[in-house]
Amino acid sequence: MNTALNPAPPSANTDAPTSIREFLAFKLGDEEYGVDILRVQEIRSYEQPTHMVNTPDHILGVVNLRGVIVPIIDMRIKFGLSNPNYDKFTVTIVLTIGRQVIGMVVDAVSDVITLTPEQMRPVPEFSGAIDSKSVLALGSVGDRMLILLDINAVLNTSSLQQALTYESN
Image (cartoon, rainbow, N blue to C red):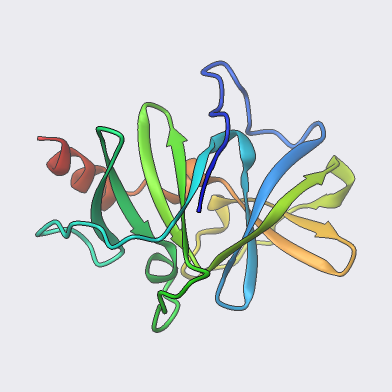
């Protein structure tokens, strides 16, 4: 399953919830998350990446995506969820973050959700596997609650940057 989407234009400002925005909804365990659709390049079936030595556990390795070496990050491991299971629903969301292309492994993708500013609630301060500064807002659609991730903040860790630097050398 490969679904191509248009990447974000370089001048796109996707940080402030001031207008209607679209999010790709995906599952990690029992929770539903969302990532700005403008960051999504494509959705791919999960394939086993080539393992890289000396990388954090959540970086599974790399894949060659049409000549581009793409690091693959398992978000279930990154967020401390137990026992990731790779099945027919497991997908890799390919994201463009700045100049870097990164693959994010998730349990399943559900749909694209359009949210108005009124449907996006502020994030309470908390501590856990996800820093509250890495969450843009909580999206509310009917009885669904989505954790809307600031993917730049989530994937901007020193260990990831070091691993990406190592992999590109």
